[in-house]
Every structure is written in C-alpha cells, then in structure tokens.
Length: 187
Length: 176
Image (cartoon, rainbow over the protein chains, first blue to last red):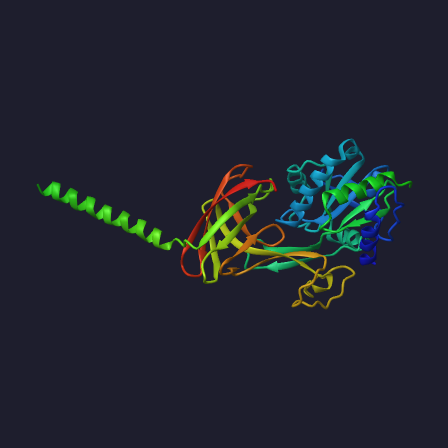
C-alpha cells in the first residue's frame, strides 16, 4: 500500500500542478500533546495544508535534515507558507518532553508544532499513518539507545485527508510543487 | 657558579623535554591523510551533543582506518553510521513496531524506509581513495559538549589511525 502511495506520488508529481490528487487510505484525525503542553487535534487545522513527519530530537541526521529542508520549503512558498503547518511527532516521548520539542524547533525557521504523548497515543498515530519506529538499546554508546524510524513526510489537505507521501529523498522543489497541488485541490 | 650550572642544567632538561615532545608529535603525523570540508552541525538548543562531518582522503598506497577520535570540546566522541533499513528489518526485540512483523532480516541491506543510527568500531579509508563523513552516512558524534556551539565556531578533533598516527582536524560549526 505504502509503495503504491509513493508510486502514486511519483506519477502525480511529474504533473503535480493542477493534477487531481488521490485521497490516500491512511492517516486521519488524532489527539496528542503539543509543545506548549496543550492538547492538540489534527482537526484543529482544518483549512490549512499540513506536513507531518515522525522523528526524535536526539536524531543527529535525518530529523535536522528534514527540518532544514522544510525551512527551505517555507522560504520558497512565500506568502503561501502561511497556509501550511508542519507537525513533528516525536517517537521518543521519554526524552522529548514538550519543553524539549519547543526549544529544539526554535532552531528552525518554519511554522512547526512539536507533538508528543504517551507511548500508547503515539503508537496509535504511528499505526494510523502506517509509519514505524523502534527503540534500539545501544549500551556501548553515550546515547544509551537509538530510535530507528520511518522518514516519510505526509502531505495532508485542508480537510485532514492524506494526499501525498514524500520520500526522504524528495527535494525542496518536489515538496513545494506537491504542497501547491494540495493547496489548489478542491476538498 | 654552582647556581649558574644548576640553571644551565635545568634549561637543557627543559629544552630536551620540549624538543622530544615536538619530535614525537611530528612523527605521529601522517602525511598521506588529508582532511577537508570538516563541519559540525549547530547543536539543538536542549542538547549537549552534535554530529561532525568531513572528507578524509588517503593519498597513500596502504588502506587506513580511523579507530578512535577525541575532541577538546567534548567529553566523548563516537563513530556512527546512519543507515536506511527496510521496515521488516528492525529488530525483533521488545516493543517492536505496531503493525510490523516481529521477524526481521538483520543481515541484508535494503533501500527500505527506516533510518537507524549505530555506533561503529572504525571507519575505513581506502588506499588512494577517500571516505566521506556526511549526513545520512558515517559521521562523528560529539557527546557532552563543554560549551554551547554557535554558527561559525570552531571545533578541534583528533583522528587516531590504525597505524598509531594522529590527524588533527578543525571543523566549522554551521546549520546545514
């Protein structure tokens, strides 16, 4: 299913502009806690395009790379960036408190909200979006454990429906183009 | 007279000692290993750790390997590798992944979709070749940073090679 969705994006991306995007059968509304310690629901963002990805703040590579890439996406979107919200869902609630998420996201220039919750809450969202993660102990390392996690970026439309799955390798141009298609899609 | 002689002897001892250190330091350098484009990522505000990258060139005819790294600015430096792994490959340890099979093929590299970081014991540098330490590949992890690092700061690390030589490296701190 996941491959099908990514393939769909690859096909649609070639003619992303003005193409009708399919509604992908994953995702949906969820409740977590935001970086300001307030309850958060995806449905509160109706009317905005949303980018969602899963990660953790101790991640040295993939997550800061994605955040830096998204900062470029926001710059490229210009005025349209006001219509896009990014949600960074932590899969490491033990280390990523709301305060840590808030502090670390302040390093990047994008309209993003860090989200966390109990393991059960996070696992539910992970399953909804067919993402994956795993805590792997690394006793030989100062880090003590590492978190393997999927790196897909989810493009959500103004009605909370999943429209595009961007792979980790997606370029700034591809994400901007995909977001423009989401913003132009009639919901 | 005795005092003058004692002073001279002390001077000679210092001269030999410092000269010895200088010679040992020179001997420990490896002219075949050239490092360039070294940079460290600006650490996240809540973290006393960061990743450091560089290109290590080996102009010699013998393959070499980095076996340990130290840094003045960090309590500990580890060599790590980021890898993409297939979802089915992550371990069958406790917890697992919701909706994912418990049996995982740990041995096979794939173009799958889980990113995982793991410590490595050494980083090989091929003869007449180079190894790139870069995002999403091999990198150094600096743990226990002794001060806050900002864009433009310099970080000094020393690579210890398998032949006992040392390579000093200065990296610039930047965002990406």
